[in-house]
Length: 139
Image (tube, rainbow, N blue to C red; front, side, top):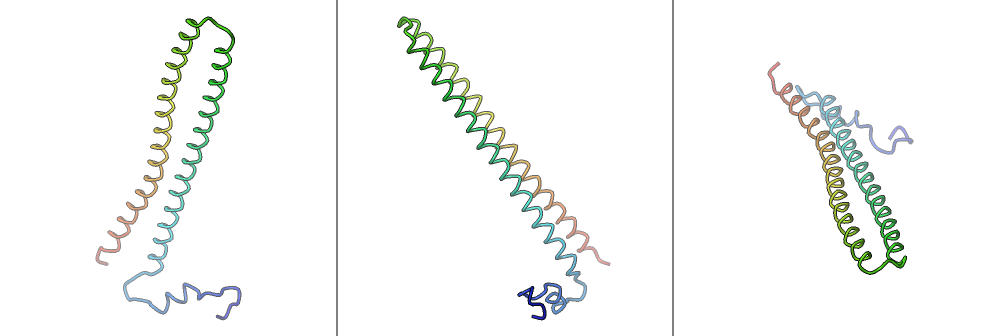
């Protein structure tokens, strides 16, 4: 350990010790670095998607609670019973339609986020295949 700032052996020095004829260790290290970058980007994409999903769920909950409070206030305002029952049925129908629309929106958000993360990983996989093809060709 010549450098006290770096407590671990320099990776380049370590790679020099295991030099294998015909194998470009630098290219292999670069490929693995790209793999890690792709995984980090995919994880970031998934994390951001989950954050957006959670934020949208919280918005939906706030909206539903506000509507529920408004509906409760209207019901308590002293309408006649038949008008109150009709209003309650209409509010129930609207709530069900809104819940279905919200579930559809959340599913689409989750699908989009997962697709974007998968595309990042798939792109790197395709790049790895191309790198392997190039390395496998005789020189």
